[in-house]
Length: 118
Image (tube, rainbow, N blue to C red):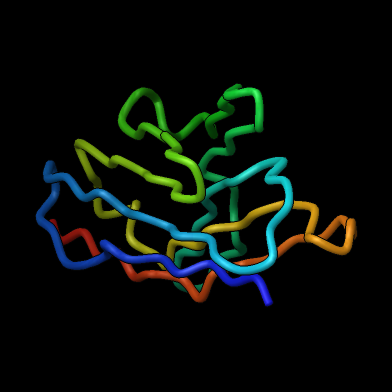
């Protein structure tokens, strides 16, 4: 069974930084995309950014150079700088992949809470 485990969330003051990690494990044959999403209280989940297997990265407009996505094998990172109170929310990792049975699947992590105080 494939799973994603996020870590690195916490409480930070506005203007501060956090680095999130997401480790994928299990019967993974090929990773197609890995991405970060977030959900603020009372709002819908939204895309933060995604990286493809070729290394192409797409960011949401609100990132505006503050966040950086990177990937090292089965681990996805999100470096967040210049954090704002509106960045508060649960950050989720998502992966599209092919498993060892050649099935095309997606999986979500359980999320990690980021709280930015003003």
